[in-house]
Length: 68
Image: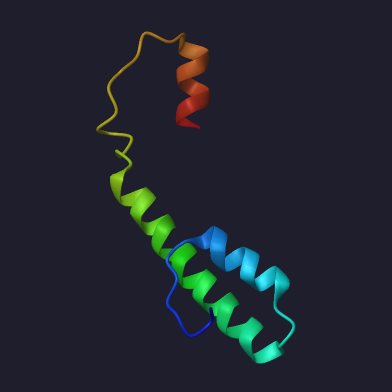
């Protein structure tokens, strides 16, 4: 599995938990880090900035806590 570029972090995590060879384990961890970094970038790219978020009818306390 380490030779194949796997995009699913769950599969990489499972493979890493079962791997006994230190070199293969390191390859899996490096792939897992790349996949998770990309996933994080994708998630933040699609998240609206605070300026773009519509004003809600939430209480002032809730709005203050959200913006904090």
